[in-house]
Image (cartoon, rainbow, N blue to C red; front, top):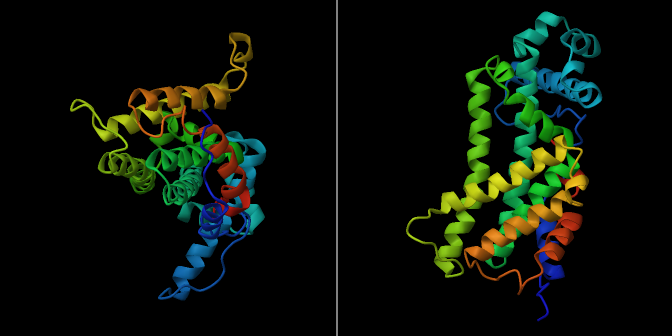
Length: 273
C-alpha cells in the first residue's frame, strides 16, 4: 500500500504566509508602542539591549560565559543599572529561556493551525518541536540548565510564572488537537485514559530522547544511528497503539515532517524576538 503524502503546495504556502519573520536576535526594537510612555520605552529598550548582549555571551561561552561586568561594559551602563533590571545572572538566564519558550510556542501554534487530519496536525507540531531543537540547540540546553534547583531558586517568582505559563500554553496547544481527534472520530480513548495523558506520554518520549541525544556519546554503540528517527518510531508506535487515524501504514509521516521542517520552520522565521 502506498503511503499518503498529501500535504498540498497550497497548504504549505498558507502555513508559510502565516509565519511572520521576527527581527534578528541581535536587533533591538526602538520603535514606540501605542500607549507607552517615554520612560517605559527607555526601560524596555535598555532591558532588550541587556538581553541581546547576554544572549551573545551565552552562545559563545555558555552559562559560565555570562558576566554582568562585561554586559555593563558593552552597553555602556553601570553594573548597578543592570541590577535594576536583573538581580543576578540566573535571572538573565531565565529571561533568555522565556524568550526561547516563546519561540517554541509560536512554532507550535503555527503547526497546530495546519488544516489536515488531526494526527497529521500533531505530526506537524512534532516537526516544529524537532526544528526548535535543531535550529536553536543552545536554547534547548539553557532550558534544561535553568531547571536545576541551584539556578531556579535564585530567580524571581514573576519570571518563573512566565515560564510555567508558556509551558502550559504549549501543552494546551497539543491537548486541543487530541480533543479535536476525539470529536472527529479519528481517535477513541479508553475511559481510563485522558487526553492530557496522551500528550504527557508523547512529551515524555520527546524530551527524554532529546536530553539523551544531547548528553550521550554512546548512541551509535548501542545501535541508535539516528535519535530523531528512533524518536519518531516510538511516538508512531504509541499513536498506532491508540488506533489514531490515519495509521502510520497509511500515511508517510516522516516525509511530511521532513517537508514541513524544511519549508515552514526555518530559523529566520522564528528566531527569538
